[in-house]
Amino acid sequence: MTQAPAHFPNSRFTELASRLAATAKALHARGWLSGTSGNLSAVVQSEPLRLAMSPSGVDKGELTAEQVLLVDEDARVINGSRKPSDETLLHLEIVKQRRAGAVLHTHSIWNTILSDLFAGEQGVAIEGYEMLKGLEGVRTHEHREWLPIIGNSQNMSELAAAIRATLTEHPNAHGVLIHKHGLYSWGQDLGEAGRHIEILEFLLEVRGRTLHLIRRGN
Image 1 (tube, rainbow, N blue to C red):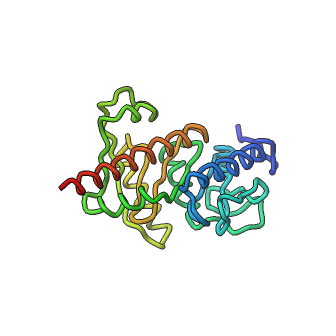
Image 2: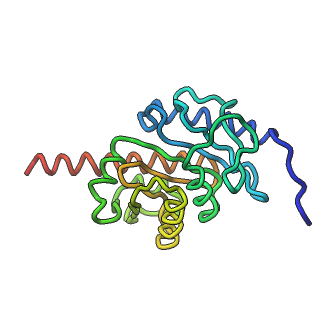
Image 3: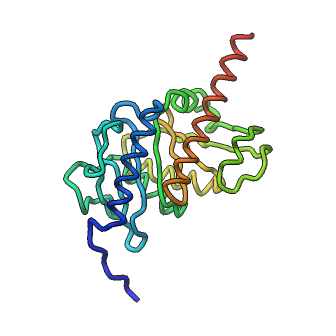
């Protein structure tokens, strides 16, 4: 049976827009979305795919629910008057590949530094930390999380294709880093995506500070 088209803005979109605005403010307060950097999305419906998406050029600490856009699976705006983020295609790719309900992209100091420091290794390994158990499906601190690093590009179609290939190659990854650009993580819903971002940001900072202390000691 063909699903009847939803009418927008509907109650689910309104709720998700409000939650995205609140999430943006919380991440901004922690220094992970400085200025207009980063973007956030949540799935409003799957068939046809509709995404609530933060717009381009808006200070995430001041993002309002009214500014959140509704986009389709081709990144076209269905509801809203602002320009969609250039990285909407990346969110759509992650949603499709991971069947995610929400995607968050942060630009913290530590994720940016480590995405550059480990670029030659094409990823950052994190293992042995109790905090890893907060990631979906991880049951022990002995887990080894591999965060792949993808080369940055201003061509969003090429970058989306790189993300697709990376997620296929690393099916158990909970996030990806883009070189000198930041961290993407996702979850079944906005709550899980937020938890994953918080955990990975914590672990990347621990990894970075540990390396700094080791190098100072030498």
